[in-house]
Image 1 (tube, helix red, strand yellow):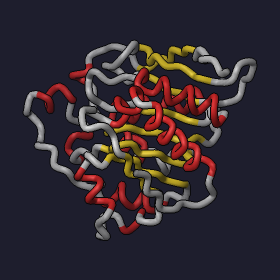
Image 2 (image 1 turned 180 degrees about the vertical axis):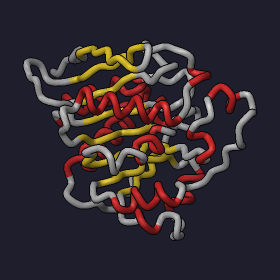
Image 3 (image 1 turned 30 degrees about the horizontal axis):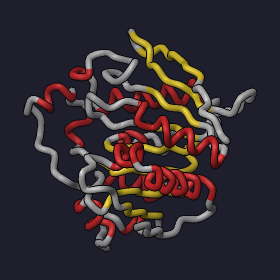
Amino acid sequence: MQYAIWPELFFLEFDDTYLHGDILNSPDTDRVPELLFLHDDAPDKNRSVFNSLRQVLLNKYNLSSCSFDFIGHGSTGGDWNKTCMRHRTQQITDVIDGCFDSQPLSVIAVGTGVCNIIQLLDKQRIASLVFITPVLPPQELETLPFGLFSKGAGPNIQEQWLSKPSRKVLGNFKGNVSLITTTQDKTWSNWLQTKSRDNAQIEDRAYSVISIPPDQKNLMQAANQHPKILLKIAAIVDKTVAISHSQVVQAS
């Protein structure tokens, strides 16, 4: 029988506050974590959404991990309305610098966390990527506070792929990349089956389409309530981190 392992909390100074996070590792070891988890930007999201997945990855695959709450989220707290995408990218940079000791890491990003980490691919030692139901907002939201956008002051989000500079950075990335989406997510499910110039540079990456119950709002919520889904995501993460080359995966 395997038991839950309590994570080691950390508090990282950032501007005039502290980012709250934790590292989940095997007992009696000081190894640097291998995975970094990034939650979505909705104000009710926080790192706790990954608790079960991280336990499975450590117990089943011996993968240690780090996660934290962005400003305006979870135990970090703060004013969500005043933060923006660029601010989040800066927070990620500080956590990587403070927790990974210049060692390569793999990143699991949900929603808009995908955009944040792509901006860091040519600046950090990132070995592989797992994108879960990505949200790719217009470039105008880079510096627009979330609070203004939520009140309708910003541009309307339309489903689109990355800007050309970001697409080039991802296309040049040599590590493994997996994109996990759901059959209910028609935008991404359709995109994965479309051979276009927008996805040509990453068409050799690994894609996984997972079925979730129709009454669920999102993939991570479904995974936390359905062990089979959780185990499937964990297996994809492990394979992405472990394999030496990318391949197309269809999981249904």
